[in-house]
Each structure stands twice: as structure tokens, then as C-alpha cells.
Length: 66
Image (cartoon, rainbow, N blue to C red; front, side, top):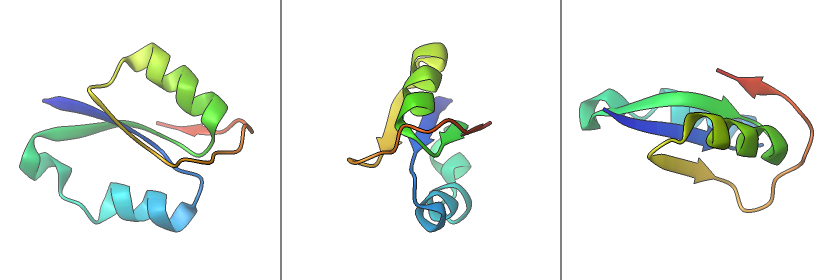
């Protein structure tokens, strides 16, 4: 299975990406969702996902959701 991390600071977009796309249908598992750049980078380094979907401009505050 392909491992995915989502880094998105807009709650509506993070919700859309996690809940309205059937990732399992295309053999992808969401490993983590982060709402800021600092935690997103930490999660990426820790999990080494196959795919990262990220926003271009991200705040640096901490708050990771697994």
C-alpha cells in the first residue's frame, strides 16, 4: 500500500482530502495529517511517506493529527 501524508492548514481542504477521496480504492493509506509546516516536516522525516500533499504557504505552529 502507498503511504500518504497530508500537510494542509485550511481545515476545509484537509477535511476534503481526508474524507471525500476514497484513497483505499487506489491503494493509498493516509499515515498522518498535519496543519502546519513544522510538524508536517517532522512527520515526513519520521514516516518517510511515498506521497506528500502539501500547501505552498504553511504556518509553523505545532499540532499534528495522526
